[in-house]
Length: 305
Image (tube, rainbow, N blue to C red; front, side):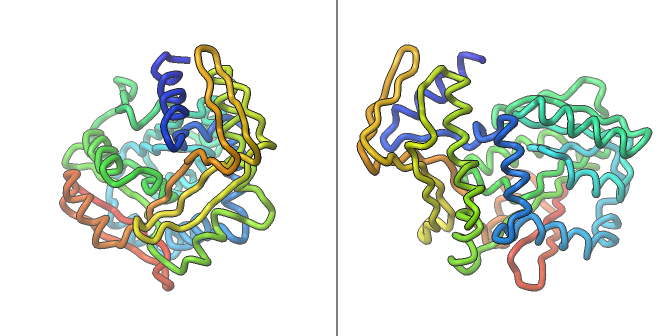
């Protein structure tokens, strides 16, 4: 593990309130649990985005034009990229994810499903900038970032990430991105606190993952899952709450948590469409077209420099 990763985790644990970056959700088990979340009845984003992209597939393909390379950030299972690649027929696909083993298997399946596709897996933390293999052509690139994952970053960091995406494409390239729109609070909160407890297991699993990364001694069962909508900031927040006084140790450090004290693990911002279009322009994507579902719950945007 790189030293920066260790210090990133321990610095977050020592903050008040403590924090763990959501990028650490995605070890092998975390990736599998997230795939399970996307199939839950309460979790509307995945099925809404999929239906939206199917309903507007022809128009999207027309607007995208010729795509030589698809670069999917946070690729995970590559299932959404599979459908996109079948439509636009790129010569090359690059999946980028922090969970490398899971990604390699997903890219292998994609390669088998689309013969002739030059499909690559690149492990890395996209928030730190991204170095692609030198032989990936710059011409006609499409950065693909589905699933409203941009909402996991607070607005300044989301803008930085959009600027990283802009740096990956030239004037003949573009970005295809999904965003979750504001909606009824009950719908939002159910999506992040499902009745079956899958999201709770996903949230707690981050503790086991960082145990592996930094040698800490968190016990998942000692922590409760909390998810709620923060109206003022227009975001879902996920936390882990100590069920009793807990002392957590790791090599070179420790932290005492009082009963009820929380670790902030994730935000998921819900951007109004006009606000997000302005952010795209600030990042260097001056032209954007949006498609939304009939309920106005979700949007997919194609943005060009």
